[in-house]
Length: 314
Image (cartoon, rainbow, N blue to C red; front, side, top):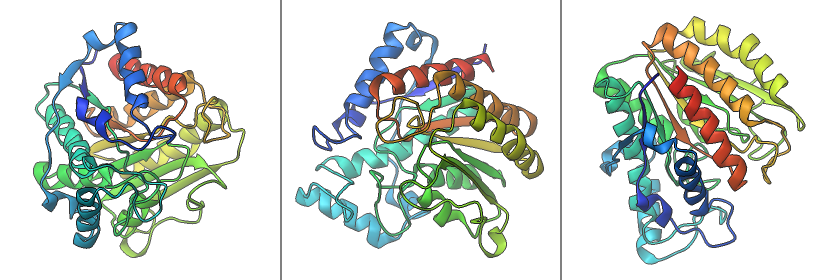
């Protein structure tokens, strides 16, 4: 059985977005309570995140954006430019801690303290653009994690696999000229944020290293797994990533209020299995996943349970 790390911290529940907001602290409260109740927590290796320096945030974002997030939090402003992305005075530091969770997960995998790790973080990151916050996201956790892997461990090729029901526009736009990070996204389309068409494949030197798989409302496990088998796996075997990051959003779940797809807990487990195959074949099993969306509390908790169990099965 694989040793799986769980990166968590109580401060992630202090990112206060307001009681009625979909991306709220109860997501993690319910998730951790469920993992405790099922006995899964005791089988995981708890990892402690750390705050990252702002120089790491600049690997994905402009200094102006970073300063804007910090300033708004310091002033007690409760929203970012898009109004949907809510913040509190602690949010800037908590967002730096979320990035630091991925760093600790990566270090633990590289040091072979764990085989894989799941980062139970808030706020999420895949909508954050280079120069502005968006879609509940402040900083691009996955992109900064990829840069950390490349610069700290000298691994050249990183894959980011995003199965959140919403297209990871920020991840794509930050990376779309870069051939060293392959970005795969499967997402409901048309849907927020309106990007992620199949013909968006990268720009310049990055052409061919972005792969979007838009799926219609109603898409179920069978549709998702067919795309993983017929589209995702061949692309990954051609790219041969040396480290794999999963942007693990669970809002494609059939009970999620922000989607119209029909993925089940079993579907997430099967997707996990396929991504792990890629990591085993090309990256010596090196893989981390980090929480993105998922807004039905029960569906999120059960889906993460299935995901982690598959990480453990190896």
